[in-house]
Length: 591
Image 1 (cartoon, helix red, strand yellow):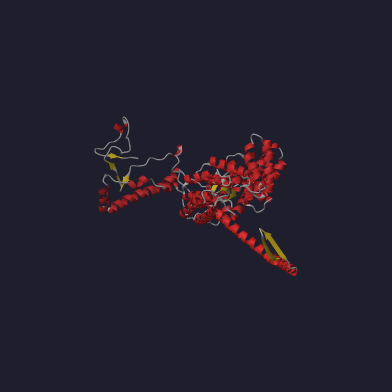
Image 2: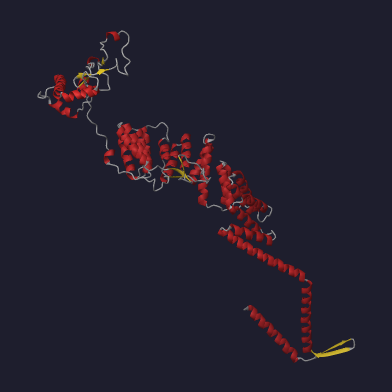
């Protein structure tokens, strides 16, 4: 709009000038070399304007002809760059799509057209080689980029990635530190330097790097406070034995930055308790317990004052558990303290609540320990231990899929700071176990049975016959012949067997009480619960020596052996062979 108004203003001024000249006519005379030229003023002005325009055109044409070679060169150069940037654009798009061959082709074309002066073309070729897997060419191209100040940071980043892929932490740390010093605001460099310093245990340098990253706004305030608390805790654990005062200061600062950090609270309370500040040590544990209950916190709280009795520790743990109501960790802590104080009813009640709400392996094992301590019932102990095998795992320190019983400031797998979390390990659906419902009878005290009475050796022998009693035989050595004889004379064999059984029955009836004899009422009631078990494994008493068995009988006849003694019997020694009765061609075995 302004340009239109300006144009109309110029036209208006020219019109006014023409009108002014037309109102004032005159003649312009030019005398030169005897020539006189006369023309009106308006004609003279038009002729001057035309001459000026022709002069400008002629001068422009002459200047174009004079600079034609350079103009042609610039045109060709501009056209070459346009083609180079077009190839670079196509190469970047192909690299983003994962087409390495096309990206490399366009990269070479772009680098050629741009005469190697464009850092983007070098980056395209280096990343194409890196994606293709040609690490030697990739490192070579990234190293070449270090000579260009515009691409030095990019080259350091590429070399850092190559060093990490080649598992060369020393080289990777060098490139990251150089890039961080070159460009302080590089996020990847600051994070990498912090990670390598933490992995190597250089806690002081790691804290300084963390402060620089926070000053450069590379991390937010929440992350800064948490990471600094972790680093301070690691440094305090390292100085706990060498410099307790310095370690206590660092641990208290870490606890103030992250109240829910369990290791910081543990080391701070431990050092405060060692210094004699029991109240401060207790307050530190209580503050952390409210946010993150942990069994180590309960144990430290129970033993915060050395020399306390088990009842004092139990009352203290109960107070700690009340700060976080309905917590499984609190209930198990009370159960452990109650078991130490032999308050078994309290321990059983606490473990029952845990097993009803969130059963874990530790709860079942504590229940097994309780059964063994209180009653010594091995059956109950095995029952609880078998349930512990099928129970879910307890919470552990987990970092990047790795499980540990102890906390660490960095992950041993990835080197990530503050990677450990107190949680249950993840299990697949196939590994998930469905627990059987718990019967209330399992939590009740076991029912004691009546004492077991044992019978006399004579009674045991009467009730449990010897194994050799089945090998009663006759005079014949062959079992086939004895069987044939029984078939031929069945009545005689039955009569003889009945006589033997009748003799045994008569001997047993002599010692056995009569059925019609009256018995006291107490003896009759006790007889129901008494179980007579033969004492076959115990040696006979002196006054109850076992009677020697008679000769081995089978079908009412002695068993004769073709040898002088059994194969596993070495036989008598010395003159006993002469005194023993011998039978020609056979030996009679006597038990």
